[in-house]
Length: 318
Image 1 (cartoon, rainbow, N blue to C red):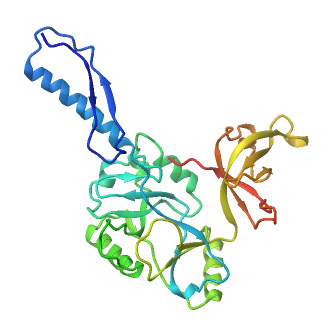
Image 2: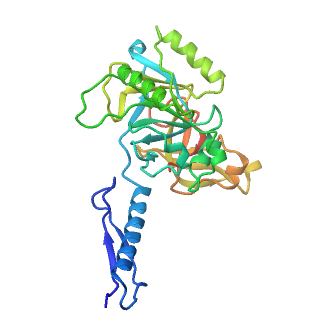
Image 3: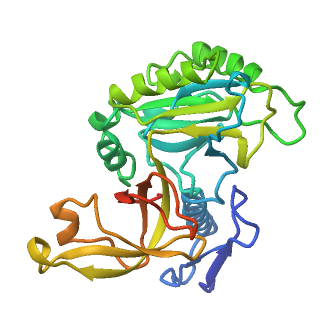
């Protein structure tokens, strides 16, 4: 007689070493079960464990931008538009968000992607972030919606130990990979140089006037690096960052009976009230306590509080 038991598997996939998947198959208590049936059950259990593991992984290492400062020589950088989309990294097998969770993209969207690792932005068009976010965060992809989504590639992750190559060289490789892959929704982010800050300012004004978010500057001679670095800089008409919601401040006057402001706390531990930028819908159903929200601001006071802070959106990393 084969006695059922809880089987424990540690699938070999991209997960922390401590990750294990436990599956209890105690319902399978059939006297005299055949060896073939036992093998079938075990294969099903292992498949479930593997799928669970593949659904999420450790956050991929990514390069994150700092803000362009006044003393930076912009002629040493390649410039591109800052796309207001959702960051996603392709490792040659799976497409993942910054959090490490797998993007539930249709098979047809990923099956023709190259074996090369890619880093970029899932994007539809200027001013359509909310639409894009709603599409890519669904656990069940909708084909007709994903037909509108492009994968805008701006970086080529390098494996550990690979000979260092400059960003200029990586851009050339990205162009070759995208051209070779020949997938309509896989696109290269245009990179170019500027002669001075005046030219950069004109480009920023043109992008913002057309509905864009801003510009990105990537140092042309930089090797591939990850983490927050001056290798990558962002330029926007307004700065933005995140803070954690600590409390809801009741509204007064026309906002009586609804949220009037959010009391938020920055990563540095500075608390302030965020009271503008909210739609009526958000005031009636404000972000939960503990949620991360993104806000825009001009600059900061000597005490570290943002000037002219305005709510932008709930920061909902998948």
